[in-house]
Image (cartoon, rainbow, N blue to C red; front, side):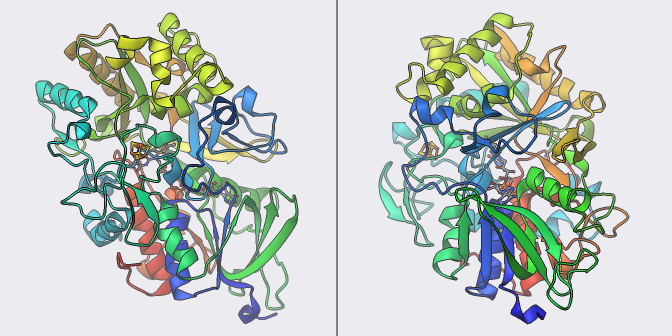
Length: 574
Ligand SMILES: Cc1cc2nc3c(=O)[nH]c(=O)nc-3n(C[C@H](O)[C@H](O)[C@H](O)COP(=O)(O)OP(=O)(O)OC[C@H]3O[C@@H](n4cnc5c(N)ncnc54)[C@H](O)[C@@H]3O)c2cc1C
Ligand code: SF4
C-alpha cells in the first residue's frame, strides 16, 4: 500500500474544542476524507440526563481500565459524561461526549494577558500573534457578555453581588464573554426561550437562565462545539463521525502499508479503535492523525503508545511533563447577609481580577469567578474522596445532599438541589467561588503499574497561589457578612487534594524537542517532534497555566494547528 491508498486523509481522535476545530478545518480541506473518533455519546436537544436514576449513571467508566476513580463509579460500565479521576495531590473532572468539555463547560471565553506568554512559551507564540485566531474562535463560538436590558429576567443577582464585593475590595470586575446563545443579533437579544437556527444551521434556544450549564444544556442554548464546528464538519463537509468509539493505539505505517513501529509517519498511520457497544476492535489508516483526546486522554494515549504498545517509541522524554491544573481552586461562602441567588442564570457571569490582568504578580495571579450550584453538584461530590474537614458539619451536609441528588433521593429541579442541602434561604445567600490562576505547571503525568494515567502534583510549590486564593475567600466572607468560608472539603488536612476542571500540558508546544513534545513552528504547529503527520491539538499542548479559563487559548492554538496542516487561513464563516 502507498500513502495514497490510506482510508482517510485525517483521523481526529476526540471531539472537544481541539478535535472539533480540527475536524471542521480538515474536512473542509479534504471533504469526505476525515474520520472523527469520539468515545462518548451524542446529546441531541433535551437528552441530557436529569432524572435521579439517569444522573446517578452519568459517569464515565470502563471497568477493564485500571484507574483510580471514586469507588462507586469504578465498577460498572458507564458511558455518561463525567469522567472523574483521582490522582496524587490532584483530582480532575473532564467530559466524555460528542462536543467534549463544551457539553459541561461554564461557557467562559477569555484571553489571558500578554504577560502570561512571556515565560514558558515558545518564542514563536505571542498573545498578539494569536489574536487573529482568538478573534475567529470567538466569532464562531458566539462569545459575548449576558445581555443587559430592562427585562428583569435578565438580571443575575449573583453577578451584581460579586461585582459589589470587587468594588469594595478595589478590584476590577468585568462581565465575562460567554458562549451562550441569546439569538443571532448581538445588539437585540432574541426573547428568552425562543428558538432559531444559528449561523451554521443548528437549532438553538435563546438562553432560559436555568443555571444548568455544567450538567448539559437541554435547550441547546450553550454554544457547544457540536452546534458549530462539528455541525459544519459533518453536515457541510461530510466528516464521518463515530461516537462511542475509543481510540486505543496509533501505529505508523511503512512503505508497504504495514504497521511498523520503526516508521516515522511519512507513510501514514493506522489507528486501532474499539466500538464500545459492539465491543468490536477495528482500525482505519490515514495520512495524518490528530490527537485531540483532551489533556488527560492525549497524554495517556501517547504514553501508552510509547510504553505499553511500543508503537511510537520515538516520543521524547518531555511527554507528560509540565502538567498544570490551571491553578483551579473551589470554595464556598455560606450564608451571607445579601442574596446571591446561585441557582439562576448562566453558570459564570463575571470575573474579578487578582493580579493577572493588572499589577501582574505571577506567583499570586488569579481570577475569582461566580458560579451557580449545579456547577459543582455535577462534579464536586463524586470527585472528592471522603474527608475530615474543619467544617465537618457543613462538609457532611453538602456531601450527603449531593450524594442524595446523584443516587436518586428527592429532587424536583436540579437547580434547587443545593436548596435541599443548605436549606431554603441559606442556599439563596451562599456563594460558590471559582478561582483559577498561574500555578507552576510542575505536574508530571506518567503511567501507573497497570499502564493507565497517573499524575503527580507538587502542591507545596504552589502554596503562594493557594494562600492568596484562601485570603481572598476569607475577605469575601467578611464583605458579605457570611457565617463561613469553606474551601472544598478535600483541601483540608490530611487529604490536601486539589481538583481541576482545566487540566493542561504534557504535550507542550516548543521551539525544539529539547523543550517540548510538539512543534511551535508555524508551518508544522502541533506536529509531534520525530513523527510526520502526527499532531496534537487540545489542552495538552498549552505550555503553562493560563490563569484565565482555557478554551479560548485551546481554540486559538487549534485554529493555528489547522492552518499549518491545511495551508488555509481560517475564517469565522467556516
Ligand atoms: C465543569 C466544567 C466547567 C468548565 N468551564 C469552562 C469555562 O467556562 N471556560 C473554559 O475555558 N473552560 C472551561 N472548562 C474546561 C474546558 O471544558 C476544557 O478546557 C476543554 O473542554 C478542553 O478542550 P480539549 O479540546 O482539550 O478536550 P476535551 O474538550 O476534553 O475533549 C476531548 C474529547 O476526547 C474524547 N476522548 C478522550 N479519549 C479518547 C479516546 N481514546 N478515543 C476517542 N475519544 C476520546 C473525550 O471523550 C472528549 O470528548 C470547564 C470544564 C469543566 C469540567
Ligand atoms: S443557563 Fe440554562 S439555558 Fe442558559 S446556557 Fe445555561 S443551561 Fe442553557
